[in-house]
Length: 153
Image (tube, rainbow, N blue to C red; front, side, top):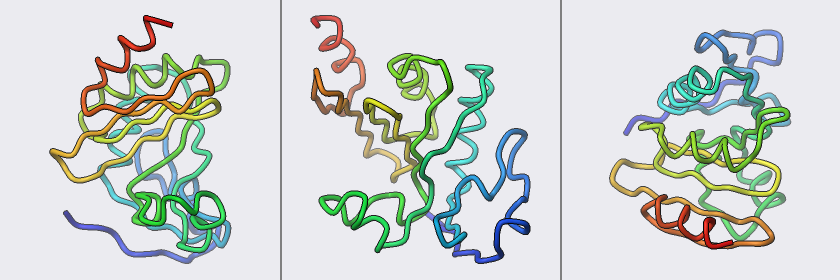
């Protein structure tokens, strides 16, 4: 799997259209650096086309230092490799967004949180899905198992 390198061009130059609805600047970190796997953009565009709503990226690429500030328990996050994004859609239920995201073939990691959905393009064959909402916690390599947990709620 090929990873793209870091770009440090500043916000104006990071206004490069990557897909119909996504720009490079949406994935940059606080220092306007970007590391991005092309399959992540492909998956996000596919999701955007399916739900027909703008997707907001709250966190894309993170430096190692940023990752340790945000989540020190995950030092090897896919965000550091440019292979993950945390997203939401305004006025759209998080659970519905998660249900759509798990159907996207580029995404092998999809997590549901209270305020965002995490998507990543981890190596193929290592699918993992999780729910970290306050009322329910669960992990599985089959997202349908997690939906059954939700239905029991």
